[in-house]
Amino acid sequence: MLLLLLLRKLSVAGLLQLALAACQTTPLTYLPSSLQQKFFGACGNEGSVSFKLLRNSDYLVSGFIDWDLTAGLHLSNVMGSTIALLKRDSKADIQLPNSVLSIVVDRAGRIVISGDFTGLYLEELYCLLGGRVPLSWHREKVVARERDYLITAIARERKIITAVGVQRFQVRLARRILWVFSAGELVIGSYRRQTGYLEGQGFRLDWQQSQ
View 1 (cartoon, one colour):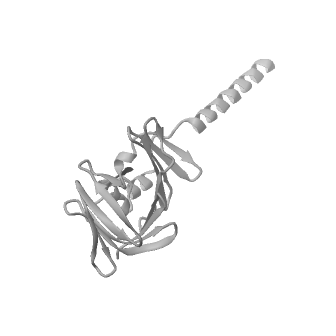
View 2 (cartoon, helix red, strand yellow; view 1 turned 45 degrees about the horizontal axis):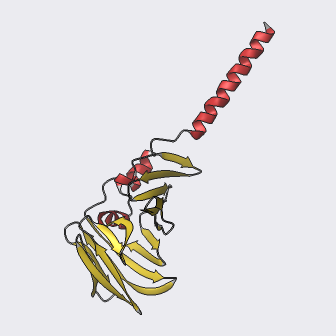
View 3 (cartoon, one colour; view 1 turned 180 degrees about the horizontal axis):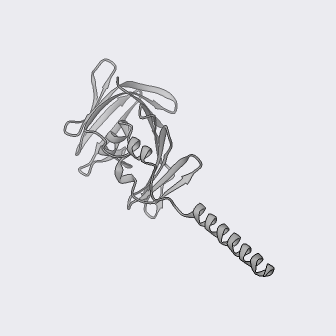
C-alpha cells in the first residue's frame, strides 16, 4: 500500500511538471483587454502632431504633421509653410540641408523612399502618429515576455514584431527581399500615446501629440 501511494505521488508530480512546462511554452492568444483597448482598434480619421527630423543625430527640420483620410498627410515647418503633401499615388521632394529626400506613395498606399519600399503604408502611419497600432498587425501569435507581450505578423512582403507594455509599444518592421528579411528595419515606438518616434536608414522622426 505504501509503495502504491508513493507511485501515485510521483505520477501527480510528473504530470504537474509537464503541465507547467506546457504553460510556459504555449503561446498566448490574447492581450489583456486594457492593452487591447489602449493601443489597438480604431485609429481615427484625422490628427495633428509636432515633429522633429534628424539624420545621424543631426537636426534637419521641425514643424507640424496634420493628417486626414481624405486630404492626406501635410507637413509644414514652424512658420506654417508647406514642406510636403502625401497621399495615395503622390510624390514629394523634401528639401533638406545639402540633400533632397524623395518620398513616393504608390497607388496601394506604400511609402517608398529613394526607390525602396519602407515596409510601411500611409494609412498605417496615420495610426502610429495617433499613438495606436494598426489592428491588422494583431493577427498571429502573441507570447508573453517579462512584462511585455510580443505580437508577430508575417506577410508576403514584411515581418512585423510588436512589443506592447503598460505604457508603451515598440514595433520592428523588416522588409522581405527575395527570400529573406532585410536587416535595415524600421523601429517605431510610442509612449503613453503622447509621444512617438520612427527610426530607419539613419533618420529619426520624433513627434508629440498637439494639445
